[in-house]
Image (cartoon, rainbow, N blue to C red; front, top):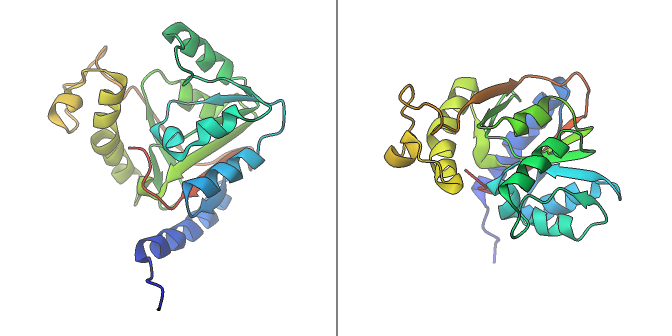
Length: 218
């Protein structure tokens, strides 16, 4: 019997090929993996034994199973997802993560021309992305790809922020309405506080984007 073609997977691969070329022009490294298991294996191979590894808050990281894989490695993991960890401990891990050997996070959106678009609340994730950790690994499902920066920002505010607000337990206007309510969204009930658009890296290869041919995160 002829095997059925997965047209969505085929499209993802075509998009990833173009993104990898665009990332390279910007000093980023791009890798495409068909699925989460392949992505986890790829990322774990990047991490030398003994490394201090930090993580940003990410539903994508949890969904891939990467956290469990990292826990089994010979590394110093800043495990913000460990059962029973206190809010104070997580905050301390955020600060330690800025000096990590490897920092792992996701990206809220990726533009077709290879820019990374991220919106943070506390800002620890975008701070680490910009400067500090020796190596940053971004893992993102292909659902995070947007055609341009404006589409990426719209995606973040309307597709990512509402469920993220519910996840972290912040009563933002978007968590109540389902869509962005800016400019009626103000601190302390606001998670879209820092907008960072990474257009390039002055240190080629410092940032590696691992794209996964699945729908992951928000």
